[in-house]
Each structure stands twice: as structure tokens, then as C-alpha cells.
Amino acid sequence: MSNPYQPPASVTRATPSRVEVVLSQQSVVGAIFGGALGAFIGVAVWMMAVILTHDNSSLMALTVAVFVGVLVRFNGRGLTARYRLIAAAFAWLGAVAGIWFTGYSGMPVFMFFAAGGIAAALARRSLDRDTEKSLWRLQRGIAEETR
Image (tube, rainbow, N blue to C red; front, side, top):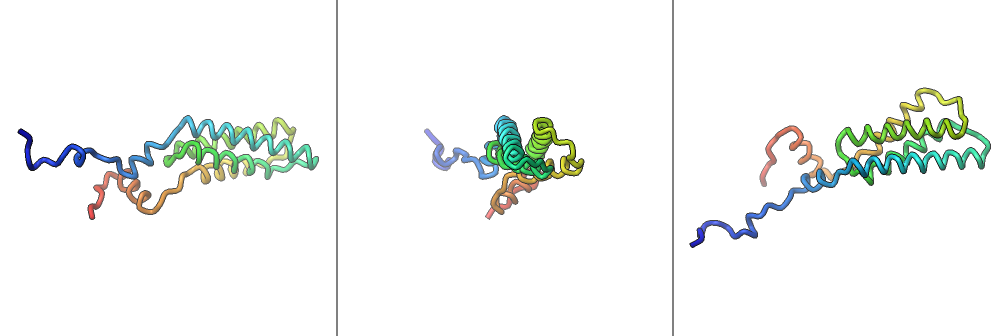
């Protein structure tokens, strides 16, 4: 005989919270793929700009960073610093590859840092306010408020 006070199994089955769903969607492999693809596309755009305009600019490193940051964001769907580091690393690799392929020698050092910072800033996934608050509370071990 079953317990009449126990809710049915369909009610007790735990559904994942929004934070658990968001955390499970993260993909390091997707971030690495997105970073590599973004660096490749960015360097290709840089090379095409040099071929078409016969002018080489260090600002193209920032273009590489934008491609890398956006593709890491959408392919990796990351929330932690790991994904921002992946984006920065691929932005730096893309900038070095662009310099190597185009033969550019006038790249200021701060452009490397700017490229990494832009890619890292663009790589972080945006969340709605409630999910962001719940994630913040989960990371700090604070119990979720019940309403």
C-alpha cells in the first residue's frame, strides 16, 4: 500500500532550474572551435583589406578580436573566466597570425592587450537579471530565496 501523503512521482521529479540549464549549456570545445574560427575569419578579413587597400593597419587586430569574441560567446556560451581567457588567447594568436601573413611590423604592443581585452569582453554571455542574480547567489553559496 502506498503512502497517501506522498505526492505522485510526477510531482517529485525535480526539474532543473534556469541556472542549472544555463550552466549545462557551457561548452569549452565550442569556445575553442569558435575562437579558432573567429581568428581564421578575422585574419582572412585582414588579408583581404590589405590586398584591396594596399594599406596595413594595426586596427585590423581589433577586427580579429571582435570576430573571436563574438564566436566564442555564441559557440561556447560561457559564463566563467575560462571562456574569456580562451577568447583572449585566440585574439592574440589571430593578431600574431595577421602580422605574420601580412608582413606588418608596426603593431604597437598595446594593440595586443586591447585585442585580448575586447575579445574577452565580448566572449561573456549575457543573462537576464533574475538568472544572473541566481547564478551569483549559487557561486557564493547563498541559499535561494523562496517566494
